[in-house]
Image 1 (cartoon, rainbow, N blue to C red):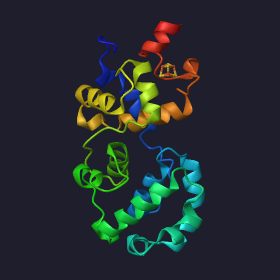
Image 2 (spheres, rainbow, N blue to C red):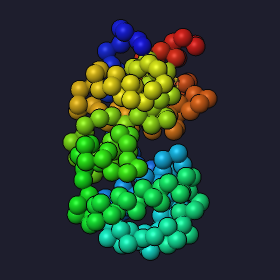
Image 3 (cartoon, protein in one colour):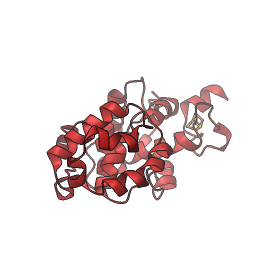
Image 4 (tube, protein in one colour):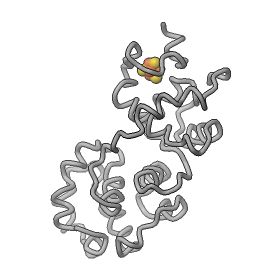
Amino acid sequence: MSANTNWVKAIQPLLEKFKDTPHPLSYGNLYQLVVMVVLSAQDSDRNINNIAPKLFEAFPNMEALSRATPELLYPFISGVRNFGNKTKWLMELAYQVKEDNNIPVTMAELTALPGIGRKSANVIQRESGSPAEGIIVDLHVVRVAPRLGIASGTDPKKIEKQLMDILPVKDWDAGMSMSFLGREICRPQPKCEICLMNPVCSYYHETY
Ligand code: SF4
C-alpha cells in the first residue's frame, strides 16, 4: 500500500468522474434490483439485463415471487450461472420478505437474507439511496484497489475494511467508482496512459 498518498484527496477525481454513472444493472425498482443483484453473482450484468424483462413480466413483485416454484422459475433463469442455488435463494428470500414494502435496506437485515452477502448489500444500499454501511468491493475493485495502492491483498472483506479505514463515509462511493474504472480502463490489461488516476497510482509508477 502506498503510505505517502493522501487518498482522501487523491480519490476525489475518481468519485467525480463516475458520480452520475448509472449502475450497469437495468432495474426498475427495489424489488427488481434485489432479484437482479442475487442473479448477477458470478455472472455478467449484461446477461442478467437480458433475461430480466421476461422474468419480471412473469414475477412482477415479491408477492408473485413468493409463490414461485423451481419449475416456474427455471425457464426464465436457466441461462444464469448457478441458477439452481439462485432459484432456492430467491424463493426463500421472497418467502421471508413477502411484499415489496418489506424489503430491508440495512446491512444487517440484507445480509441475513439468502443469496445476499456484503457486496450485494452494499450495492442495494447504494442504489436505494440508503446510508452506506460499507464499500462495494467486487472483482473489479479487488483488481483496481491494490494496483492503485489504496489497499492490499486479494480478500474482498479485508480490502473493504482497509478502504473504510482510509476514506470518510462521504467518500464510500469510491468502491463503485473503482468498479467503473475497472470495467472501462483498469481492465486486466490496464489502459494506464488514458487513466485519470495515473498520477497517484502505484502500479503506474512502478511500471512506467
Ligand atoms: S493507472 Fe493503470 S493500473 Fe493505475 S488505476 Fe489507472 S489503469 Fe489501473
